[in-house]
Length: 152
Image 1 (cartoon, rainbow, N blue to C red):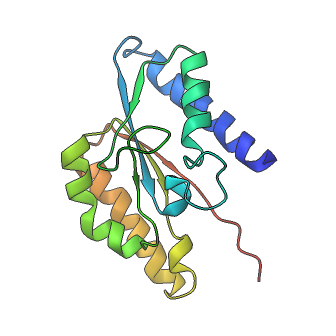
Image 2 (cartoon, one colour):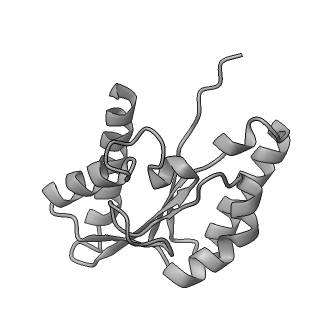
């Protein structure tokens, strides 16, 4: 839980710093993109993972935002959290997601589902490809990439 709070605090501060210059009153479109952790499927008491906590923090700070993505109807607003999907799947579909939602910020949490089946270099290449696609769609988009700690 402590790690999650540090992540949310760092993310909140980064988003506030990013958007207080120039776009103070514009609505920020944030796309939570990733696997079931993003969706909040497993281990989330409210079914929204980090999205409800982040939304509450942003609201408290007066940030005008909207979570965007093609998945709707569950807690925490829209998102692109895809249960069981790999970085390769996300890479294959990233342009569709970006075109449909046109986010200003992408919160990318991906790679967990790859760990049992994919080579680490393939995972890295897929994530680099996802980031490149986001940058190609709009070089001004902000990307926050979550990291995993792997113990071997």
